[in-house]
Structures are given as structure tokens and as C-alpha cells.
Image (cartoon, rainbow, N blue to C red; front, side, top):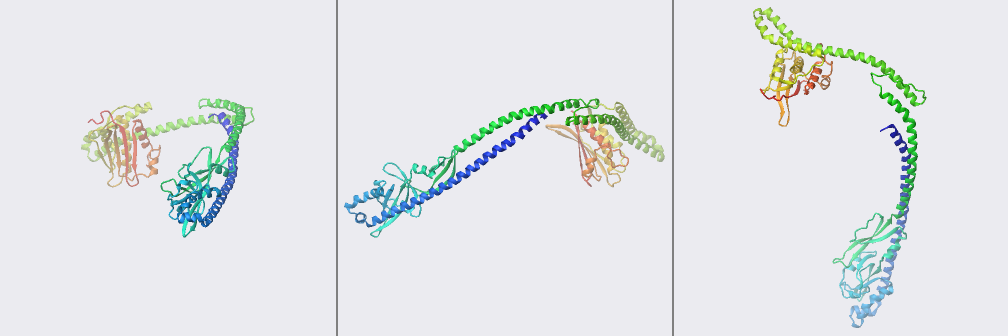
Length: 563
């Protein structure tokens, strides 16, 4: 991301974020205030509805009580109910209808002790119908019960309650109430954006995106049209229409978007002007700086400006001067370091090649002193070692003459190289043993490099166990991989020495790190580089007191499993 883009985004963020926070705060405060106002109104509506229901309950109870008192004194009702007087039969059938109209009720029926309906005002044909559930279910309710029952035209919903009287030692029940219509419910809200709806138990709650439920009032409910009437719970749901709030939000959003558009245009113009003023001299400095390298340090950063850009130019000029001086010093140091590193590596490799020669000469000197007659035979036995070491040193000389020796990608017999290295290594009382694979594995590589790897590893292992009773160094070869995986040859050099700590292992392959008084610290470092040149891998398993196992894996030759 360019500096100009970052500057532009920064200005936009600095202007738009406060504007967005303001809009968010205004909308949030508007929601909180409107919600609090609606909550107060809903609380008032709920209180009014509960007060209306309580008043209606008292009214219905008073009217039923008056009817019960009148019936207890009505002789014709007594004759029709107790003596089944045929002349009073018609009076009894018409009584509930007349009383219902006079008392302003919507539902009224009279039942005897057995639950038989003696007179029904809302549905005259219900006489002699046995319906004991209604008085029994509402007798335990001290408040109005919403009842669904039939009429001659259609079912109705009424808020009812019960009362009772005794005539001639018999108990009679009066059940009456007033109907509840949608007009009555609409008048309860007292507001255009608040509505009151009746939700019956069997009806699913109505949820729309344009309204939300604020409060619910539970009302006992009894459905006389069901096969097994039982008291359930209906709800008076008070909901709020979100139309006004959404309109206010849309208005705020329009103003906010207008302000945002104007602000974005102004910010864009301001960012373009500032970026041109700031980025142009910086771009010129960047172009000059991009042309600097160690071979070209002649850039001129002089500036007449007295601002931050001028200060930066002068800093770059001073830095370039220091780079000129430092570059010359660095090249001299690098030259000396390269020569020293090469000298150390040559010294290390020559010492490895001279060690077998020194051992043979020491052996020949010992034989010449103690058994001179065997000198010729011993010389013949050890002549191969001398030839091999001389050939090794001669190859080193040719490679170092080229400084970067070319690798020979030929098939190397790993077992043969291991046996030669073990023969040439001075044991100093250490048992050297080999566990070679019967398959005579071959690797793709350079025989000289493989020999240098093994001589360093075996030599280090022998040095680590020198002077320890029963010390052994074991070299193992085996073929691994194949069957879908790349074929490789694994060479393991294991010793019974003291092992290494984690810290010692982390430093073991660093250049010039050594724990031997006369060591150069290059042996394992060279080993690692040689293995990488042969596209191999190196792994070390060690712990204090448990010895060390160095595991080398090299790519197998195409005929790597041939004898």
C-alpha cells in the first residue's frame, strides 16, 4: 500500500469515524428514548386493561347476583324447576333470553345440580343438554374466564363467570358474561402505533418484521366446542408497530448519507492535495535511494529544504558517506575472513589425510625398532593405506586448486568406503566395528566426499570415547525406503561415549566450535555441508550418559541394492 493511499485512508478515517460514531449514538439514543416512552405507555395500557377487566368482573358478578336473588323469589321458576309444571315450562325456556337482554349480557344459561341446562339465552336450543363441565371448571376462578361457545348463528367469545342459588333445597348455577369483539380490543390500546390482539391457545403467535410484542396478559380460556373442555390460557398481546421508528431511522440515515457524501468529496480533494505536496519529494528521494548499492555510492542528497524532507535528505547523505567508508572496510575484512576460513578448512582436511600416514609411519618405526626382519612385510601390508591417503591428499590438492570442486555423480560402494575408513582410523584402545548391509548398498555421489564425511564422524566418535573402558564405535549401513518411497541408504555412526547436552548439540555444527584443545571446530561443519551437497540428510540422537548416534541418509543409486 502506497503512502498516498495510507494518507487518503487516514484522512477518511479521521473524518468519517467520528461522523459514524455520531450517527450511531443518535440512533441509539433515539431508540432508547422511544423504547422508554413506549414502555411507559404500555405499562399504562396494561394497568387500564387490568382495571377494565376487574370492573367488568364486578359488573358481571353484580348482574348475576341480582338475577340469582330474583330467581330465588320467582314462583313460576320454582314451579317449572321443582314441579315441572307444564304451564311454566315455556316461561323457563324464555327466562334466560329475556334476562340476558335486560341485564346487558351476551351469554347466560341456567343449570341444575346435574349440569342439565334449564334455560339458555345465547342459544335457546341448548335446553335439556347436560353440560356439567362449565360450572365446575369456572367455579375455581375468581376472575373472568374467556369462553368459546355456540350461538344460533356462529360461535362467540365471551368473558364469563358463575353464580349459584338454592331453590327448594336444590342448587342451581348461573353462568353469564359479555362478548369480546375486535372493536373492544382495538379501543384498549388508546394509540395508533400500539395494538391489542387476542391470541387463543390453538393460534400460532403472529410475528412480523413491522411489529414487536411488548407485553402479554394471560386470561383463562375454556373451549366448550372441543370434545374435552379444559381450562387453558389465552393472551392479550400488546404489540408496537415499527413504522414510526423506521421512518425516523430512514430520515436519520438519509441525512447521514448526505453528510457522508459531502465529507468524502472534501476528504478526497484534501488527501489528493496533501499527498501531492508530501509524496512528490519523497518519491524523488526514493528514486535516488533505489539506485544506491555497494558499487555505486555516488548519489547526491543535498537539499535546500528546511522541513522534514530536507532533514531526511541530509540524513541520507550522511548515511551514504558512512556506507562508502564502511564498504571499503567490509571488503577488506571479507577478503581476510575468506582467506582465513579457506586456510582453516585446508588445514583440517590435510590433517585428516596425514593422520593415516602418521599412524603407518609410527607403526613402521615401531616394527623397525622391535622386529626389523618383519619391516618389509608390514610395509607391504600397510602400503595400501599410504597409497589411499596420498591419493586422498592429491585429490584434495586438485580440488582446492579449482577452489570449487565438481561433484562426481557415480555409484559409490558404501560398505567399501566404511571398511577403508575403519582400517585407516587410529583406535587408541577403542573397538571399531562395522555392521554392514548384506545388500552392499550404493549411493549417488562422490567417493572422496563420502570418505571425508565418514572420517570426520568416525574420528569424532573415537575421540569422544578415548580412554573409556569397553568403549566401542559402531558403523551400520542399511537400505531404507522403496515400495512407493524414495530409496535411500542410511549410515549410522554410534558410540558409547558421554553423549551431549542440548546446548552442546545446538553448537556442535557451528563453524570453529570445538571441545578439543587442538581442534579447529570445522569437522562437523564440513560434514553438514558435504551431506547437503550430496542432497542427503543428517540427524543426531544423543543425551548425556547415553552415547551419540549420528544418522546420515543419502540417495541410493539406481542399482543401490545390487551386490
